[in-house]
Length: 632
Image (cartoon, rainbow, N blue to C red; front, side, top):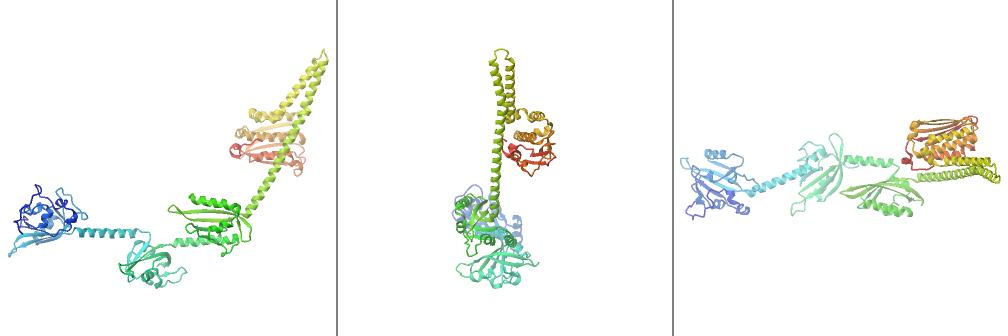
């Protein structure tokens, strides 16, 4: 090598590494460099260097001549220690391997981004075998290394992707031989690892069967059809009989792979998913449809097609040929008065991303009559979009008839209650009128007569005036008694126990001995409305006792029984026949209605000659919270 070349400018005051100098040149230039050649003497002192090395170092070759090679060149041997590589070179006269250069701060560079060289180092010997020099020839293999690394990464990503798939994947070549098989495929097919690779796809090894259980011909296997015709196969169903005799059902997709410029596939990729459980579920679903009395329907939102179970024919009377698989056909059969409401509800539910909804409507059947249907639907969303709607139709015609009958009966009952209430109110008004006319009015007339007489007598009229005053006081007392009977605020102010004293006094005046036994703890648990209701019943029954019982004793008891307050009013009177009109009189109807308002029960126990017992039972709960406020 010539050393007479002009001495170029020297870069820096110390030797610079290959990589450090190379940073200013750009990788596109460095990747195209020719071989670097360096020669040294037996002590590894540089004696020669070619132009390529000079370009990498960035300085003139003459600056490197005469300097120790291993001090000037900073490198790391790959796969072997530097010292071991130098030892082999010294002892064996030859070393060949890959190296990576690094800079002065010893920051090593990796394969992917920096310069990698394949270095061939050899000893030069004279005729006696003595080493007189060493040569180092380095070839830039960075681009090759990067391509190999990129290929390795691509292959690694490919294998990682294939192995991470939840589907089974196999690839076969142009000869129909399996070249690739992922772990999931082995699991689905129930074969040991590595057993499928190298086997023919068109082989009886698979024990393939069709959906009807017959053997699958080898030339009809989906992968073979794709290989022979280049056509894609989608969602083919196949059963594979395993070694234990069980059958795994698969859905298979096949895709051809072409070499550029060729029309015949060079390979076929098959992916498959096990659907054994879903197939069993479909069978169970089919049996469930047959067992269910509901008409099941399933609508694909994208296509608008609707599947309907056989029960729909049973409910409506339409034949399969008459039924159209569209929502429009169905809507036309809904009663005109219900159609707009149902259509609006369906549109709203579908736009509002609801998962459940239901409708009731009248549906025109094949014979022209309308039947009442209850339609419950469940929506299925995929990726946030409505995909399917599944529903069930129940025939509610008979229930509607019973419901209408019940409503009519309730209306009739309510009419009877209203009539009884009005009659009771009229009777109460008549009673108040009689009391005012027969008692208060007579007392006031008597007072007026006495006052008139006192006026005519100018002397000694004191007695007449005292009589008039007495009559007026008696009238006031009568009015007070009526007011207490009618005014519920008296009960709220005095309480039921004080109010019962008036009841007892009234009984005593009518020569009836009262016996009262009220549990105060029960009274504390009654709401004001419940207490007033019981008091009105007590008043009503007391009137019945005074008017009709012909008794000498009357007993009033209020006790707790389980979770209820139980009021019992009994007498030792003459009793009566419950089957006759007395038990259905206005007074008793009024009592039963009052108890019913608060979810209570009323019962009469009586017979001729055995007195009468009235039992009232109401829940020990706040009526206001559970039944609404009522003012009996």
